[in-house]
Image (cartoon, rainbow, N blue to C red; front, side, top):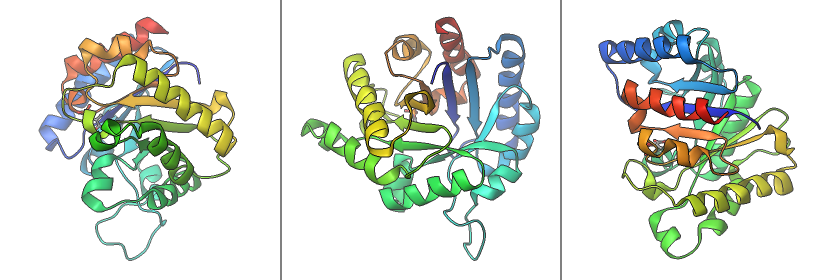
Length: 251
Ligand code: PEP
């Protein structure tokens, strides 16, 4: 897809005061600098979705950080895609490596969550990426191939957004090389077209893993990079706005 999707994953951070103050700074920036071709999506903790959504209404899209595969039921502690949609979300992150590691999520579970998101009218941001050991063993493409095959639903009719997040780059300050990002993003797009029959204009592949103001321009300029998924740097208004600036300059 043309343009960029710039997504903020606040993870489990933000009491009300901090989250709302950050949201107000972002909304202020976006009101002045927002461009049609650069979509910003904010994924705060569930507790702040409603209020952050109001502050960012009309300037940023909202997303959940996870959803359950069912629409409702006896699933204590979970949130459904339908509930996220009801709160004004249009996106949901699924398959983040922290969920895979800490909650034992498998590619099959992630595919079910992605399907639930589509059914609820949301666009899932499906996270994939190799571990450090897999990267060192030269297995990156093999891992990516399996994850696209198993975690991406069949017959996607809307947008397909995949975030390539090498696990070893998340929260570590390390990023994949620009050459590797180009190679892996190209492979993901080709696999999505070939294995899932998704037309190229409906595919966005985001890069995630220690993206910050200082490296956003060079990463966004890599062919086949359709945007970024930002964790730590999305909690600092100046850093995240600088990443949005970098995207604005490249469109
Ligand atoms: C993430 O959590 O998706 C992420 C990319 O984190 P960070 O930017 O902090 O590496």
